[in-house]
Length: 258
Image 1 (cartoon, rainbow, N blue to C red):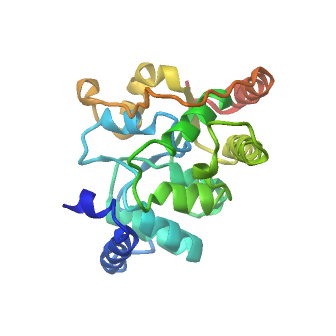
Image 2 (cartoon, rainbow, N blue to C red):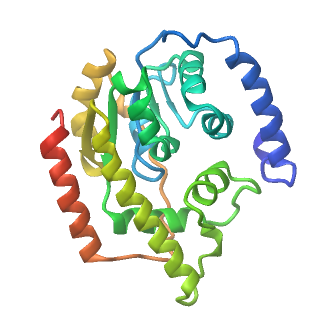
């Protein structure tokens, strides 16, 4: 029933009510200390975060929990809400694309800066192709949290304005903004003291390291991926991909735990 309602014009109102109920619970949490040292995967949406999260027991690993609530209150008072949110969820692993918009805040927060982070690397061409196709697929939600709060709210792009039929200035604007954000985010991850990088193709190979961080064993047989086999648009920019490879190779050399 909830999924059906989320595909109607009442979707946003439902999310607002849900957010109000969650906030009432979060307010009770401590702001002075943390109950769990959560490991955060901070990579943007469409970089394998669903797959990574699903490799672990859902009781200790979540993908995009309470994201609608988080966008509003992280922007209002990041330091206070971050700690309350962490204690409320009490996870060992969280994989949420929203954190890619808050790397600087994480690096400066008194508690967050001492936690461990994972950054999944994917070539810009592949990422842009996936993002544009995914948020233009049929039967989209009337109110999509990620599209509204992240891509429109944080990046300033409306992916649903992308024209698959003809090349346009709007298309190029969207692509340029995605590239700008992707490089900016990746560069900012160097501000985090405890960050480990992994390529999207090698997530499974890095599970032993993540297990050591969490103190938990993974369950790869229960993992799953979000896929979109019907691609209306394919972006390819060899020069941009090469620049990204140079950047990430340097970051891996400087910061990687592997």
